[in-house]
Image 1 (spheres, helix red, strand yellow):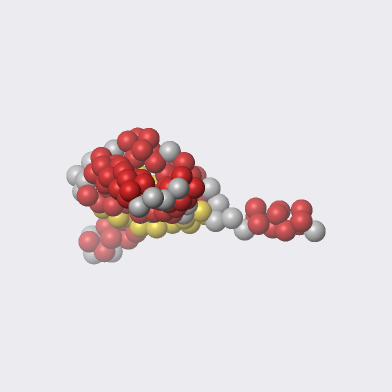
Image 2 (cartoon, rainbow, N blue to C red):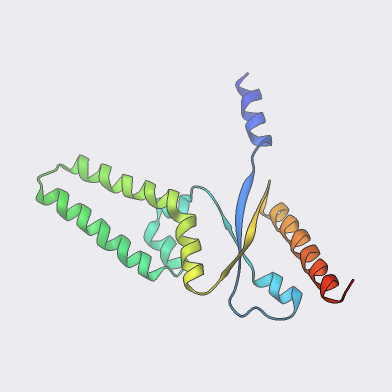
Length: 152
């Protein structure tokens, strides 16, 4: 019975990605498509387990500074209040959990700050499936717009 439940869960898995286009995209469609970035929605284990390294790898310098200030404030504040190490560890773990849940939102905010535009959202079983679906719709939408502009 447990095997049946676990296998059903695997088959129903759907990933959702936000798609972002860089500022000043090239005119060539292939180069434009290659520069698009797919951000996976949902919990980010990298953001939860190794927040400073994850933020540095994603060039989120302002968020990293805010995170370090918040972490220092939590540790210093709880220590000054006389809280034991158990409470401090619990508070740090809670901060790490928040970072895991908000990782995708932080990535989106960082891209939007740099001038990237939201090109849409797509879902599928794998990132390759999502990319194929997105580009099928993206290309057909652009072709329809060109046809209308040409009077067809």
